[in-house]
Image 1 (spheres, rainbow, N blue to C red):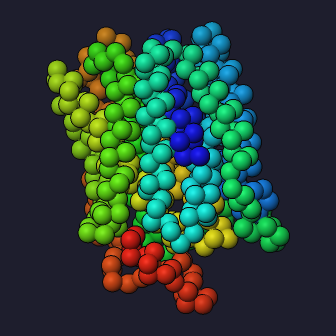
Image 2: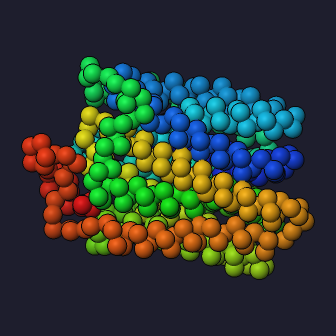
Image 3: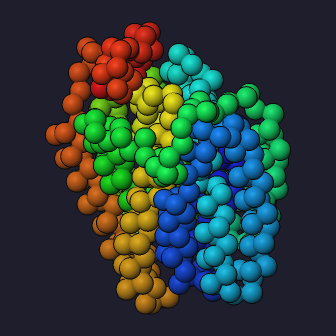
Length: 414
């Protein structure tokens, strides 16, 4: 499941900006990623609520992937025609279907891992392998800047959609419970924000995701501006690094603690963009190093954040809680990151098509500042006591229940 989820995602998302720039649609790179973020805001909580109450998670995952595959099959012709408006529309529709699947996949994994949730990083690493396989495959086929890569995505989506029907049954945990309009937007998951650590995690995830938004939007065209030919292959190095670092997560949590391990992932986003600034001065290899930092950036941020939510979110709306993380990261964070960087791009690189790599520096300042603010907020406001067992949010108020110590010891964060 994780492998196919990220084969689909990695086959097009990493070099989408390069495809647009190559086909004369560079002006809509920023708007395209911004709309993808808007879709992430609009859809995951709704589909999460549906998955929590009405539709088995594996079926929701299957239907969303098949619908997304149909949309992807239409994109090559539209982009080749130069129709920017319709391209933006199709990307928005596709992401409405795809974005919720990230949260659904996490929810399915956590439900079936049960009390063995410390194994999640080893499950999630197959997603990283999927992204690597997709990136290397697209690069080897010479499709990094080609519209044909969307056909690859469509085929992978259809395969994954059919496969999802065979996943272990994951029935709606709140099936039969009274439904309200608040469930349409995942209101119950928002109630978790009253807990200090959860709220701080969401705020810092938002700030960190600004950097993620900048990276997703402009990393591939920047690497192209540096003269790198196999952009998809180079970007796959980042995912390969994730494979290495993901196995260190249990050890990092054990010896550093959740707070400091997460801080490392958040701060490293700023470091990688500082390296991009250095790379602009004829040091292409530094850009490759910055890409390789993906292992720490993603594993010690997104994976650990998902693990934390998997521990503390009540099972009745676990899908909504995981979708909230996707909402904050791929939604609001991606939105602000792509929006702000889009404005800067339009006034710098976009204003001068012949500008050199150094012209990209103002764009990279945004995530560096965001990383500094994130570090300050996280260190000051996230309360951390490794000696106390991790509890399900609200459990103490209702019954004093806690997660067994054998589970909490590996990922204590409250």
